[in-house]
Image (cartoon, rainbow, N blue to C red; front, side, top):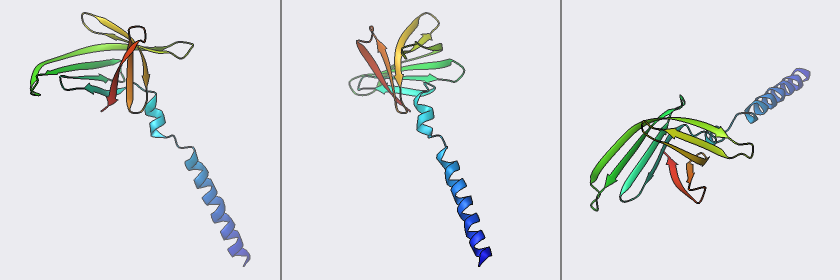
Length: 130
């Protein structure tokens, strides 16, 4: 009877340790929610725009335009480099440097959405994670 009691206590101890170990696992959505790295797209009836941010601070931009019938009319693809910064107030900024021009956006990112603010925050572009 004593050995059964010790065996039960040992099993409970093992089970407790296993459950406590699982509670420290990081939620994948938490990890991805703060990262701009990935592929982001925005589309409507006349245009689709895709940004792909790689972890090496480089990326690609793709813009496709469509006519009234949904047929592709033009396609523009360009590589860029980018830098990220965050102010002491928590404002995140991304600077995109293309071959002939650069753009600076404040941004917010979650697991599924990227908001690029322009015109001093008066408007924004909303992208979805692909």
